[in-house]
Length: 462
Image 1: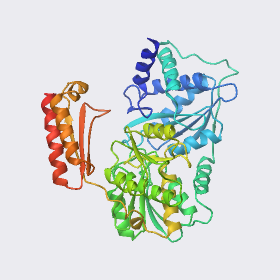
Image 2 (image 1 turned 180 degrees about the vertical axis):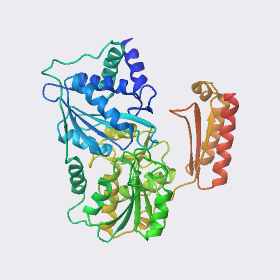
Image 3 (image 1 turned 30 degrees about the vertical axis):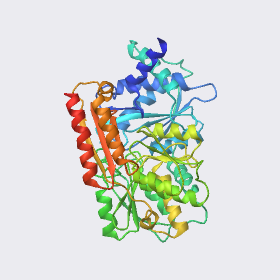
Image 4 (image 1 turned 135 degrees about the vertical axis):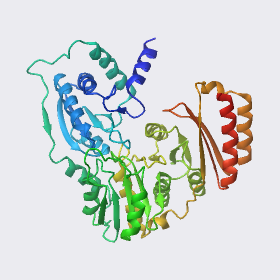
């Protein structure tokens, strides 16, 4: 009974990537954040470690939530190290290097400004484990029901300090990930900062390595984060690369934990393309083989799997979400994985996804091998994907999924594809939808298979 109860409480606030929602609507309110800060400080601080590190992206609401969290943490007796606007992976790194008991990021990643949220890191910079999230939720329930917020003794109240050189520490950390003999003087690079957390550090990192840098969408006003820009809207980056005659471009999202790239022709290179470049280089160096593979997700393009197979590099698939990719990597003692969205994990470089570190790994590969990005991805042919979203209409997906007609139709499609394509049928994690996705080199055939399965699901959902 206790296990079930904790699991439901866990789901009440924490999703797959922390807490997120619309500002002003529960739980994304100042009052909730005040109590969350107290709960984090109460549960995670120890006698040896009582500092909680806080960073944020550029959303206007971030200042308000930072103050609320700071007050709650101080009331619980925790000290606070304030980093200001910095990428999520920078907070992970600085939590570890500052010997914090926990790290907090105030961000809603690639969402628009009117959303915000919280991500939590353990003292080693990794995502906070479920057991600690559950303990925080239990404490939160207690605090939300209390008439007033309890406070530590007057001589035990926490104090806050601002880390004035936080950006410099992260820039130095990123630059150190590149080999000493690698310089980028020959590259003209456009960087789209999404008016987000990397608006300062992103261009400075590239400049420190010698690149000629053209920054776009690097003037946040608190309301323009991710607005028609960044990794989810790369069109302006593609145009800028062509207009400036740049060698390539890279686009981060609001909290800079993901990246997509653009070659000199203005062609998009998403997370699958980036994984191919990194995997090919590691295979060339003897670091990827039949025992050391790559983790993708259910949505990773089948073309990447075929390209890796030609090098005898295994690809295994996790559920969608970087935490599931991370889990599969740990289970297999592998190092490289990621999502099509550009959230890439190089666990030999960082314990969390880092858009700038990922981009630097690609740039290092290009510089070392004297390749353009176009040449580096020449061995990858992505298959066309057809995606159809089918509303469930209140019906239960597990029951629909067990239907004999649907099972037979799925088997027929999979038999037809037989190593030349792929069918994915999965419920959305955020909406009452079923996603039907078919990949095949023949777009017409992929569309036909997808419509056939979608029609069956739609009829069963009525």
